[in-house]
Image 1 (cartoon, one colour):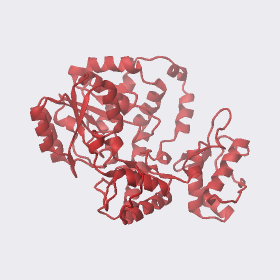
Image 2 (tube, one colour):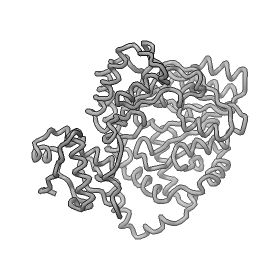
Image 3 (cartoon, helix red, strand yellow):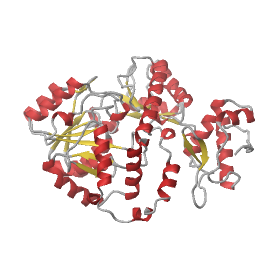
Image 4 (cartoon, one colour):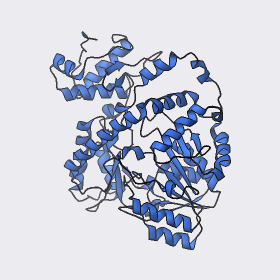
Length: 461
């Protein structure tokens, strides 16, 4: 669209928000037709005599409200959706003024081009089959895509050693259901993925956190617990650990694998972000394939809405895992499998990963400039960084004060295997910001807080 010019309503709101509101209103009214291509950021900035950064931020805000689709390299397009647009009253960071760095959104602006994929799918002669129940074992093409993704993630599996789940959280629950029963002991890092802690609670297992250092789980502490007790499962996130962003080095992985082997402990290796590291160490599963269960998801690395996870499973447990999958989901959505499988086959998935890897690297460089290079031990491929508290701050106080100042972060309690003994720190999601300008604004607020001792406020939790 070459002649469109939005009507801006100037008020107290930031200029980028006024422009985003105008885009949403024009979409809702039909002035911008579904599928229409908007002017480039530079074209619209010149047309309105405003900064390029303002247009970029406005387009991203309109995208977050569901009005636009961004196709890297091709431009921004009005989203094609049937029915009414529930957009004009949308709330979110722009409406509330909050820079929300509390949720690890996977850089949506760098996702594969969904519109093009759906057009191609719709032109297929047998697209209707994707609306039918389809037992996965009958589809060798999807199996091939799953094996390919596992191999890309450093976990090639023999025939029959791959299973498909509806995302990493579903995969973790299924594996926990197979490997541990009520009352069994499961070990995790002292800070770990909250979704797994929820699954463990639902399953009724006992969870104990193992102390960590800057390289991940402490082998001596793990060895001592295994010597005194008999844990059923060791759950590890060794690549860009959640929430610390640590990349566990190869020697530490070898030590953890040796301890699991010596004490007959099965391992769940959750490696959903592995591809965000250019050359990660070997997987733990490759060291002890007979007792390790591997999870490789597409959601975080490729696109959040593609709820697919491919599991590497030892042959001894293949039937049990398949039965647990059937009991919890029957089958994974054929539509998502077709989409994810196609993106794996044609390289779109890996290209999206490469774009996200490059962008998150730039965001880490920005964080180092603002917070200082020693502020966090998180790896530069991680969507988040972990800030240990200092100067008298507790996690809860820092989280509450940051939100009061307009920045959302997450304290340690949701990640702690033992919330009452959680180390003081906060997770800052670099991938959650709409753009680098917004991220910089949020990080500067945190930097000011870190440079000042905590003020004890009565009643502050």
